Length: 97
Image 1 (cartoon, rainbow, N blue to C red):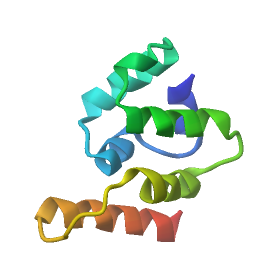
Image 2 (cartoon, helix red, strand yellow):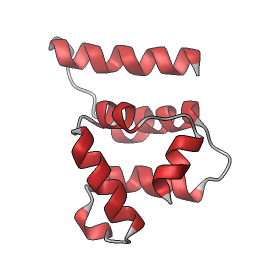
Image 3 (cartoon, rainbow, N blue to C red):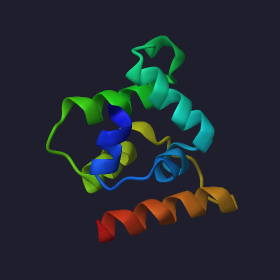
Image 4 (tube, helix red, strand yellow):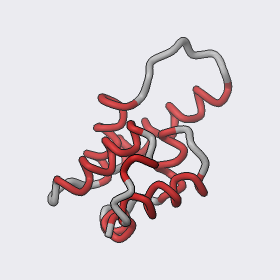
């Protein structure tokens, strides 16, 4: 199950939802849909991440965060407080992971 896999990698659903800028309840819904194989109900970027996690047995938190940064995050001008907060969280986890 995807939720267990995420937990094994020392990732929190709250972190993933912050990184992808979706709500925590929505992330839990998407995880449930993924486990039920209701892929059409999942945001395509989130589905790409879930597939990446499921298909790569030996990845960890740092690798997942790197994948998000390189493949799923849209670059836009900084300036909004929320944007800066998300980027700082990502940087912290890359350095400490």
